[in-house]
Image 1 (cartoon, helix red, strand yellow):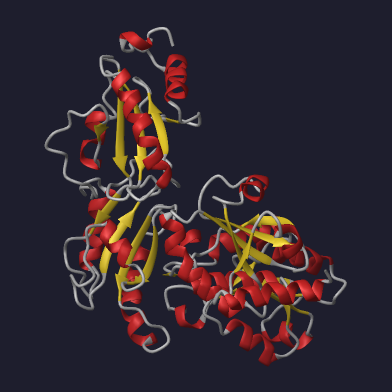
Image 2 (spheres, one colour; image 1 turned 135 degrees about the vertical axis):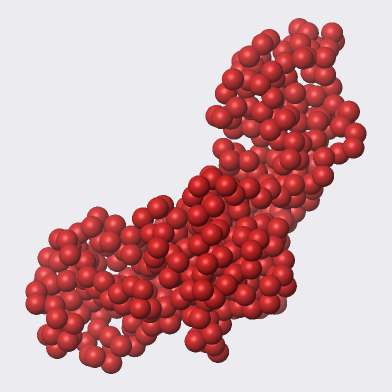
Length: 486
């Protein structure tokens, strides 16, 4: 079938279904994806809770991008060949394809706005050429920061290096370049230089609005310069940039932010956070402000309610290790309450917040139930090896595993050195050292090595678990008499 007819057929099929997301399978995946410069594909399972949450955002993004970048989805429960070919082992998995070839894993935001922004960068040039003062002003007058290279001419070696960097980092940052002498002169660039322009809405007296890259222009030096400076002293955390900002020791001041309708009010509290942040710079803690409506779930993770403090910021702090703290004292305009909170944090006087279910009144089943409050007592019990399953109540794979996992626990019930446990990962904080990205995730915590739990990657039959424990357990497993010869 000619490419044009194939595209029309796919679009027609999508419209009939009332969706702008193309539904692809084993039979048509290769032929449908190949004609397009860029396609974003979601590999999913219908029962997956994360997939269900993503679905409306993905659909909304597809509608906005349908004339620019096609979005497609593959149901892995009925198209196992395609999902296996691209190494899909968790849901949802999002991948970017260029002309039918897998290009990269999509690791951007999972909101409609974030997907649209991310994929538009994939579709356009990696760096926009600027010719006039108006071009430059329009480019840097953006919601996000801008990286602009100023060069002598189009044959410049520095420009070639800059374009390499822009191509490699286009997913996360905005790049433009110019060879116009008037623009170099306007920004006091005598030879060739790269400038980072902070977005106008976030400019403050506490930091420079424009930063200069002082080292030789190479992809490596530019990458470090951008990553070290792109967000500044106190960026605005959104669903679109949270992946880049999380994963570090991070203090969040959460309040009503609206830079479109109320930029002055939005910056009122941000400036007060920045004043305090400047006093604690260099101590390994990053600061952000965030909108309470956008981060409602984040507030719940810290035991804070959306309506707890009117227009005053709520303060939450999460370390890279996953430890959480919340400021109980009301935020004050002079910043003193935030100062006291930080002094207590750095001196080790703060008590961690832990999201946990109540421990069960009776825990005498073969599989022991663990909650966040009892994790140390049960899983980190130094006298036992412990197998712990992190599950979600809605997870289909978890439900399929349950009878086998229970049988495993029954066969090991008499063993004083091995304990089989499970924890609902949707209602309890995951302890540091455990990486849970999908369900079920199973870890083995041997006695004497509780700080280094091992992810279980074996089969899901009872015999697979028992074979694993025979190899890895500190003591030879004691099985029920009927299974001693396994």
